[in-house]
Amino acid sequence: MTKLEENVAAALLSIHNITVAYASQIVLKDVSFEIRQGDLVVVLGPNGAGKTTLLRTIAKVVSPKVGTVLLDGQDVFSMKTKQLMKMISVVPQAGSSVFSFTVQDIVAMGRTPHIPPLAPLSQRDWQVIREAMEATDVWDLRDRLFTEISGGEQRRVLIAKALAQEPKILLLDEPTANLDLHYQLEVVELVQRLNREQGITVIAVLHDLNIAAMLGQKFVLMHKGQIYAMGEADEVLTPQNIQQVYGVPVIVTRHPLNGRPIVLLAERRIPSSKGIRIHVVCGGGTGSEVMALLKSSGCQVSAGALNRGDSDYEAAQLLGVEIVEEQPFMPISKEAYERTKKLIEEADVVVLTDVPFGWGNIVNLKAILEAAKGLVVVFNPENILERDFVNGDASSLLSQIFATKRVVSIHSLTELQKLLVTL
Image 1: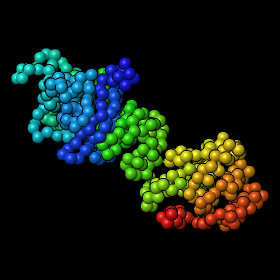
Image 2 (image 1 turned 90 degrees about the vertical axis):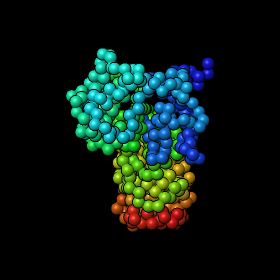
Image 3 (image 1 turned 180 degrees about the vertical axis):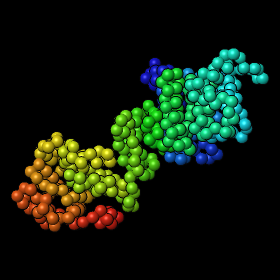
Image 4 (image 1 turned 30 degrees about the vertical axis):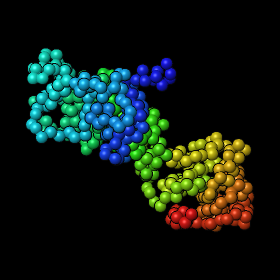
């Protein structure tokens, strides 16, 4: 048995080379992945990425043009609908009903695949219904009309209905959409509890990246009908992935309590300068806004050498900037110096902030002098004497840079913005 065959055999759900088209428009293309029993998978991506179509294909609502969906090794498109409904239940986006059913009536509909047509519900059916309602904390709402309860309560009722099917896999399409924070957290905790305590495999489509990071164990990031990235949170929710897929600059930091990624929008301040390689020589907080501006413009940014623990080092990490790093409070080593020179040599532009220079970091100036081949942009060169704590050596090196390199002096981020537009 090949490795691929072993993975398929171990998987509860296997999606193989799925391509789906509506008329002549392809909405899913060559999508493949496996899900094991007990996984909690979140599917992400912008509008039109194919997320809902993927769920609909798994649930046999949409037929693929090419490819197969295997559930416990069986092709779902060869399964009878009732057989499939016993294994997969779906909670759709819409949470409203035009009919005034009671909450208990709605949940009881989940038993449909388990009973013959027009047959009454058995004692076991009512037991399953009650257990599903208790698991989702809606038992006390059983006699209320579905149309008269809150959006968050409706969402829990629909999840209870899905649980009443006794499925192996629960498909959730935007389970937190249009809910306030209280109900969003309630749904997240409910889904996690069902996955953890009942072992239900969950595939959830979400738009909110931070809710997704809170909920998921594994992630599938989709872009234009294809899988762009797949894996755990740290592998998928990166600034580079999100910027490429969503087309917006972001900062990814960590939740202070649980350590999960938090995605923050960064301001898009200038037209795209995608492809321009820029190395930033900074330190002591002088480079944070500069690096954020460059990243938001789509530049390929590197920085350093920087000591770990420096505020610019922390900012560079948050921004996903490549860093030449040095030990805390240590002078820049020969190895870090050579790496800095290499990045400077490869850069189209070097930006030198108005960083103070001491014996520990003066070699960054030497690296610019020796390696810079493109434009050197210098912030506030006229106050170098105020920042020179190496007996005038920093001032001398900066003078040599001005004399031998192509240099532009600037005094603000606004000037840097205007300069980047011309590059």
